[in-house]
Length: 583
Image (cartoon, rainbow, N blue to C red):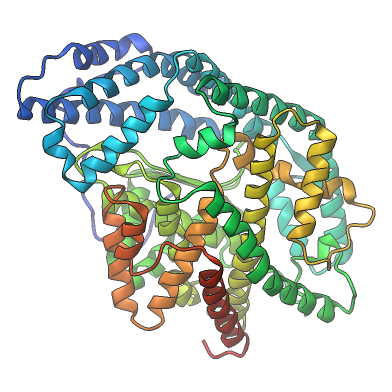
């Protein structure tokens, strides 16, 4: 993809290696084993030698993580090429298991060093050492092989999902592309697409149930091996949740149900009233009730790229330069195509410091939002790329998602780049704000579901379905008519990648969404101050505790009942302003 606009050049070079050979061709464990042996056996006799040891280990971490990243990126770009899947699988099954014992040894060597105390007073190092100590506490050699099995097996979800296709009027299409039809003004087309997608997913339902059951069983064993009662407690610790507890998660669930679900009910009631029905059929949830065609902000990846850069330039020229640089370096793969894994991501590349954006754009508003979301992640990588150690850049999701979700909202003021028509711009903003409100109960639903899943690891599939129905009822509005389509609803959770690949990595989206709304709220009163706070927070990487990072951004790390009420009131008011054409 070639960017036609003139642009400034952000010159990026990988740092010169001082420990790893510049020409290293990392294919097997033997290619890197000597570096681990060096770090393990090296004598450290001074503070300078200890800090050099830390830097060398950081360099090795960056090289390894970037190698694994490229294997994953290439595999997800085209799942039809066996060699790409094999290369990634080899890393997680043959290389990663051999890394784990050395990582444990190096962690112990670091924490036992007499020179560590001289660095422990600094906030960034003290937080890093805290995380390392946690890894030491969790490490069990008997979990190495099991962890590799889980990593490999969890990837089956992506392959199963990528293979799901439907055919309408002779055209084969991915689920992502087919979902666009749910906005089509012809109800017969919407219903057909909904049913075809539902039936296609049902073909894999038993396979996905079996896969999830197998993963639950192995994850529970992993936790028991590490001395925990359940995988939930193990995972929350392994995720480094130093700043909140499972009880806080429960508070989040309750607060969302109390303050956000009523707003979603208002949105759906308005939809039902405009459609002239008491209850909404599931294929009518996304259609414009006034008969307007689905918004199509761009035609292809090049338009999406150029428009995003222009928007980012208007917010802060540095933001635009980040995306330009990624394009020049070939670190973008934006358009949906056959064989591509579903979804989208920004994958950090810790050595070069320039991440990779992967997505499945087909021309929808959601694609635009995905692009600016992943662009926020990318800007985070650029702003934190010069931090001294790789460990300082390894972000908790509550911080990473703050960057991306804030960019969704901050960019809204520039969406006329894609929607020059004021009526369409108004529709786009309304849809974005309503989507945010709708996703928060879904996040609470998925997180609450996970807590139950791993508290009850021996449950049967029918018990799982019953619990899912119970939770979705708690967070539902009662305005959607699933009569005749219950089999689709009861397995709706199977579409959530996080459950399979990254368990418990989801409530962070909700927490970060609240933070993003707060940054947007600040931007309404002092835009430049909000942008500077945002950049300053992202520059910290993970060298400060999460509450301090949020404070640097000018917001609170809070998801209590009272705070949820404050945020909900603000969003409702902003939504009303947009609907009235005031913003």
